[in-house]
Length: 167
Image 1 (spheres, rainbow, N blue to C red):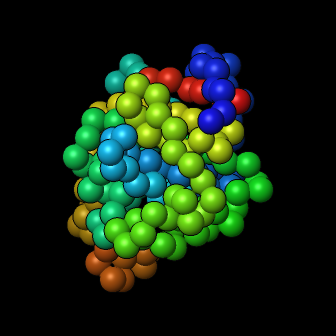
Image 2 (cartoon, one colour):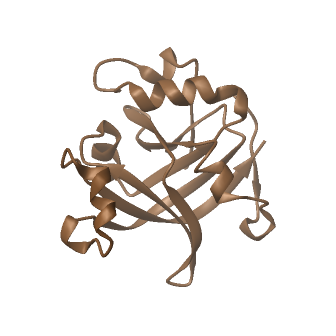
Image 3 (cartoon, rainbow, N blue to C red):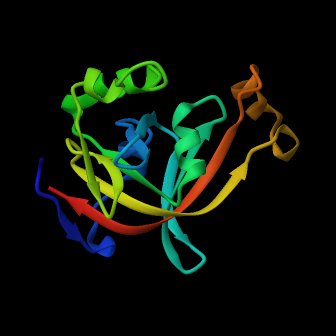
């Protein structure tokens, strides 16, 4: 297990366009008994309701969504470039059928009982504040529908960043 140090959110050097959109991240939720993770490349960070927040988008079909919906917390693990293959694996395989974390060569860690990926460079520990299901009738631009031809919609989760940890 790696040793992580908490760091103040306002000292974080973070480019969400690079870290989320290009490098991707792993969103994890669950408990010490059972957890799951999935790769995300849609999301962001900011301030909402007077809190530092992260937001992520999870499709209805994803197994990890069941864990996020059932609990109050989730983590976002940002990985080094050397983990791109593991991120790709976690984004294309389901945890319903196998232990994809182990098969991707990754390991679980926990803080405040919130699961996260131990190999992460930095970790957001988040408390779920809101879950908003996206619907086609909410799209202002018709071109957005091209992302949902199969009807597998996203839920946007907004979580307060309780702690930021880095190695």
